[in-house]
Amino acid sequence: MKKIVPILFFLLPVLSCHKVEPASPGKDLAFVSIRAFETKTQIGTNALPAWSEGDRISIVGDLSDAPAEFTLRSGAGYSSASFEGVKPEGNMFMAYYPSSARCDGITWRGLLSTKISHAMPSQYIGTLPLWGRGKDIASLEVGALCGVLRLDLKGVGKLDHVILEADRPISGEYLVSIADGIFAIINGSHIIWMDAAKTELMPLKATPFYFILPPSQYEDLRITVVPAEGKAKEYILPEEIEIKAGVFTCISSDNLELND
Image (cartoon, rainbow, N blue to C red; front, top):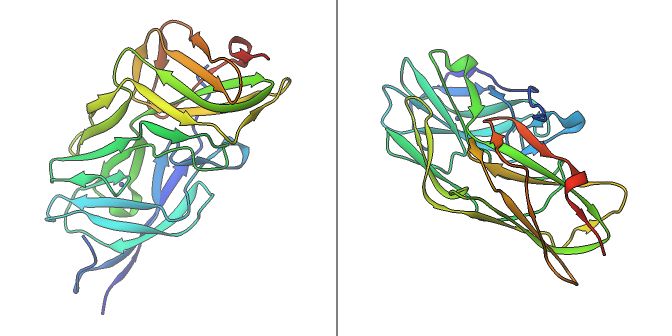
């Protein structure tokens, strides 16, 4: 009979606007609740971080041959959620998200998508890589490896797409060290292309646009706003924008107004 072990994965509401092997017979079945600092795939009520329906997170033990995948059991839309999976063997455990990342026991590789779609905060805004480690699988803590740039746009009319461009890679394949969580883009692109065809700007209320970015000090970030009709407009964002892991960096709509 499989042993059921209660374990937890939490999300903590510490975001500011800067301004973690298939099931095998004979293994322990664990219910895990992960404490995830900062944010993940969506922002829930009151701008708190939230887990999403269908989330999966992987945990690898220092004595296990392969990572074990844990599936969201309950708590979608909340900062605390329970995950279910087969407990890996070990005395030290490393957790990473998304579970789709390829793991070779030393590193894991994932993808920051070059092409994304615009969504409001309560919807899916992207896959923010998470990593963490601890000796007690019942109280693992994971934190964000990237930050989120929020651009507030206001104006009149429907959009087609929005492009964010940087002087260094900001999307594409990334690599993370399992041992220490060091993050690096290895095959990347300097742009993120956002489909905004279903978005209509308003003249008095700003609409937020979210971009997941590697932590760095950026200079000369450029945004190109392409309306459904009319000419595209390009903006150079304020110099030396610092993106920190797990933090929202907000750009005021006062600097990004799209007129007729």
